Image (cartoon, rainbow, N blue to C red; front, top):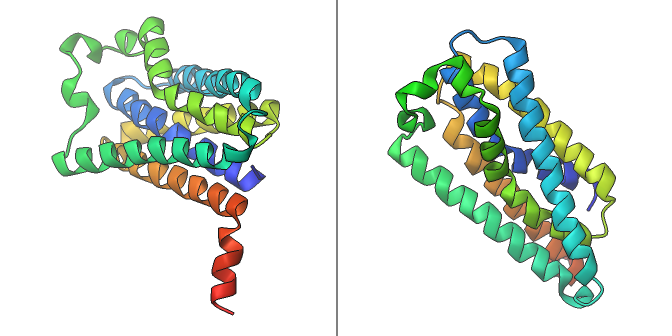
Length: 207
């Protein structure tokens, strides 16, 4: 996976966490930089950890499925991206905001940044990255560079997301999943084209 694809993947994977970061920005009354830092660190750390775990599992089997690895990578990214797209479009249609379902007691700054809750949210929003870690193993990507980029990108986006939530509310929350899902589907399609020679076939048709 080239650097641009990796950067795009990191951005796409961070969209779920970005949506939650926006929620945190909405519910935190006295927002400070340390609040945004805490959210960014939690989500960035787990977003980096999950691909590593997926990579560790995938690397053991990559040599046995080398012939079909591009199809597996495509299927995983299509599934993850498609799920994000469907959920994002549905929530846009319903005009749904995550804060609508938050209990009253969670509106305080202390509860909104509870370590236990942030850990659960960070794990929940990084599960998709586990499967992407498998695709990194199949594409023989440098896992240390990959996880660092994914973690750093997620940290930056979630840090910004907290302040965006404070300023704009739910305006960008649901659209994040749509953007992220579309990027993952496109990357999966790119991987498939590169490994099946489909790109060369298409070029030949137009010459």
